[in-house]
Image (cartoon, rainbow, N blue to C red; front, side):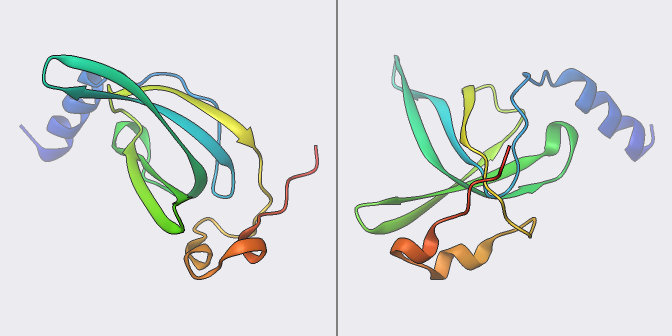
Length: 117
């Protein structure tokens, strides 16, 4: 069996939920299921999307938020069964696909212009 056939087989087995379209610069809220022992709870992670990488079930996206004056980034796989929902709060207007320059900015300089509709 070739490598491409194996990759195709695995991609067919992974079920991807339908989420709203979002890109770098958008502010989103990811509701994530956390399992601790035999208990489950939902946690919301709200922040700015820094990048989207890959396509199909292998795709991931990075979300950054400021918590207690510390920048926190989290990488989410799109095909993760733990993601309950993704809500787009604001659509940002940025010129780049990866906005890592946001890491060096604080306060008002870190604001992203909202896209005109």
